[in-house]
Amino acid sequence: MATPMGTVDLFDQGYVSDPLPVWDALREDAPVHYEPDTGLWLVSRYDDVRAILLDTDTFLPDNAMDAIGRFSIPTLRVLAKARFALPPTLASNGGESHAGYRRVMTRLLNARAVAASVPMIERVTGECLDLAEERLAADGVCDLATTPARDVPLLVLLRLLGLDQALDAGLDTLARWSDASLELFWGRPDAGRQLELAGEAADFYRWIRGLVAGPAAGEDTLLGALAAHRLPGGGPLSAAQSAAVLYFMIIAGQATTRQMMSLMYRRALGEPGLWRRFAAEPAGVEPWAEEMLRREPPITTWRRVTARPVTVRGVDIPAGAPLLLMLASTGSDPDVFENPERLCLERSNRRGHLSFGVGRHRCSGAELARAEAGVMLRMTAARLPDLRLVDAASAPAMPALLSFRAPLRVLAERGPAERR
Ligand code: HEM
Image (cartoon, rainbow, N blue to C red; front, side, top):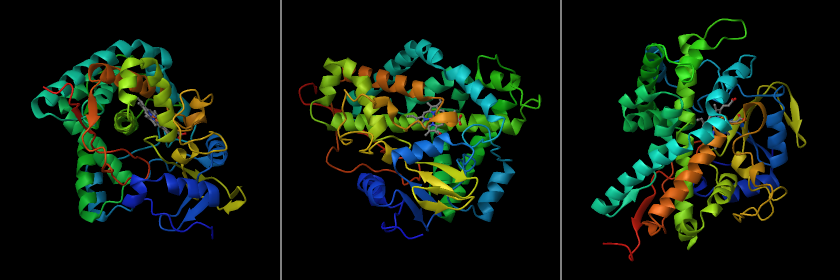
């Protein structure tokens, strides 16, 4: 399939650091673009992506969790030894059991549950900021990508899902397992690295199977709700199905939010005057965070697969073709968002972006992510109004993953006026 666009190397560091020009070119010149290297069909305009997400008969979510690369035999052996299996439950489930799984998530994560958990989010954020302040006092610098951006979402998620026992594994280990899983499935590791990552994912999965086999829990917890849940045929979930939900949730429920916060902290601290404005006018924080979700979302792409031959914007696509929906590109589509490069607090269709998806599989954790962003930005700016980036001039290091994009580190220090 010839398009006016050249090859797009989705794993190239230049693209990962600054993908916006590529997204602009795709939308403009090749809104449906076939990429031979990965076999993916890139779809980048807002209207097309929205229509695809809403047409769940033609565009199936079945490939959402597929690994990008092929696993080597040693990798497969490591995973098989751990009985690693991800039967379709949530994001990759196009079948009739999806609605029931989704109800379980909605009961735990609906807007009321999130609103009730705000005091807990504030408490956890306060504790993490104590730690950040201690590091600033001791070392003169702290990494916001770790505390609070990594630790708050992890602690909040485990509390909200009633998975307090998971804390025994330790935050560092949980984050390492989660990152290894993202790189294994969405990255392009070489053979040695793939094997290493498979070892981490297998350890993670074994540990999850241990949680699933553990003592019965109340129905207000994720494990209790899964134990009580019945599939459309009336049967209970298998251990592999419960483990698949936990595996997805422990990753999706915090890695994404950490990435979102790392992007937001870096941008908020990098724009002259903005950080101090957050401290003085906290009401502007939520609209700004929403604009960041539109313009620079942590999940840049998501996949679907065609159920039948279909034509999108005049381009014929065969049945069984994997599509890469460029969610992040749609947030900068000038046909929908005027002056998309501006983070505009008054934008009337601010919440119309597709960064959380839309339709049947729309993100169940969107309200939680928004609440966390509001609390963390407001509290951090209030406690540390003199914070500034250490390496503002340099491009941040970002891992090359197909669907996730965020700086690995956000190093910050206190400004001269406050330094002791
Ligand atoms: C900024 C943070 C986040 C972003 C950008 C994000 C984005 C997404 C996207 C793009 C999807 C796929 C939508 C689709 O296929 O149509 C998704 C699915 C999902 N997300 Fe999130 N997410 C975030 C945080 C969270 C959190 C905090 C949780 C839970 C605590 C969560 C739970 C889920 C679940 C359960 C699904 C699958 C929904 C389904 O298939 O029915 N996400 N998310």
